[in-house]
Length: 114
Image (cartoon, rainbow, N blue to C red; front, top):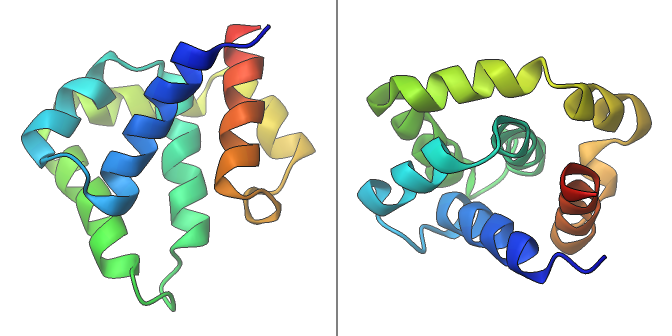
């Protein structure tokens, strides 16, 4: 299957957190409506790729912290996503740092939607 729309939605969410392409107010409903496993995996990928030594880490990780701080639903979604079997499968099979953005999104969306 292709899952073009799902991949586009996941990329929009990742872009919003990574590149601030949406305001925090526009990002929050996307996070709250997204599959908890997808939210958890996107945050995990960003945390690994924007580690403390990365020049953009403060902005990227700051946007994530701000969303968690402002929304109990986002916090709950992350907790629910952490317990999802798809997350367990991904983290047992792959290393976030080995996948670039496009590979990561394609793999995760395929698994979640397939």
